Length: 492
Ligand SMILES: [Zn+2]
Image (cartoon, rainbow, N blue to C red; front, side, top):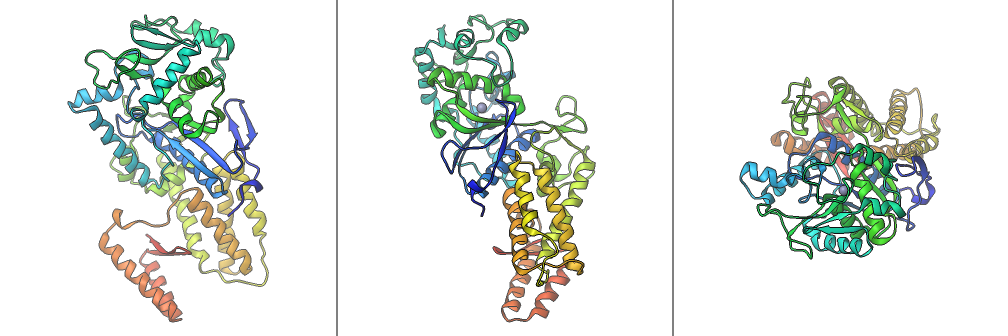
């Protein structure tokens, strides 16, 4: 385990537009908030990529020894169509179309979201709060913004006064937009006549009589604005000023811009030290869109049940593919790309399995400490996973050379090589070297588990011939055994 203070991490901060040296607000601790899904439909593959980027960041910071409190919310109310202040609530609309309760929609798609993320081996966040569970906090926040003179009430709704705010603050500081340009570029829409200015945004909306999801407030029976929930939940669990706020690139404006404005207006300070944004996932060189048919969802990609890819891809191959690009680059999902990741992933896993067979020597022909530091340097450079993976592939070369006798390694270096490879591949990148019984044949898994047990007994009895025979014959049948400190797993 590396100690966090030995590493010099640089993070690209959207706020400054530069890579900055990461220094957490409280030494040894990191508070990280990531905008979660609005649970009105199956999770989009692009969102899976965004959450995977932050899962990797969460994993790396924990690996370094930081105590990380990772908060990722569930939006279960207040998110209107087109991310606007008018129109129907996305969840209510879906509930109306399917003639079920809004909370049934929320439950169904929250379960789907968790299932998909589990399939891709995500770590759960430390706290996963919901918007509907924090209505009181949101009402209190609105009251503070009103008390400080940055919001006004019209017909039971409350709006944030962007023009007033901009007199003493900089609206657009994150997305690098100027209010004058926004004024020039926005049209007044019908239904927004309650607002003083079209740039103002809703903190609280009075509910129409037919609106099901509603709560009492000092202003009306209604519901909170979408931007507000993230300010309420992030600061409740991480404090008024916290380390990292993440989300997809598309949330930078207006969502995150409004979060900064709300916090500044309510508490007199900017909420976040490092703003991080994950880039888009495209499909065959174009934006993914259901309406054009250039679209694939996680389940279709995993099952192979689609017209876009030539076959099914495993969760680890898809995860490996996503990790082969920097989280800040646009990533183009293609069959050729996935196929090449599948081959690369297999080479990597073959090397991991081969690690167990390497013989120790009195000298090392490779500088393992230096290689290890290169791996850390890659991750410390704004979590540069493609460079890390390039270094891991260099280790594949060493491992093969050591195995065929053209290179040697000492016992200490071999231990370091194993520990480092396992840490980066499994703990940090979150890849898996085994298929679990639940997505393969239970009977086959049971039989292989029995052979693993017999092999362990053979090894305990120093019957290495039998132990090797079990391993080699399974390998011939296409089943690889992978030994690690946690025990033996298998893949095929
Ligand atoms: Zn948010």
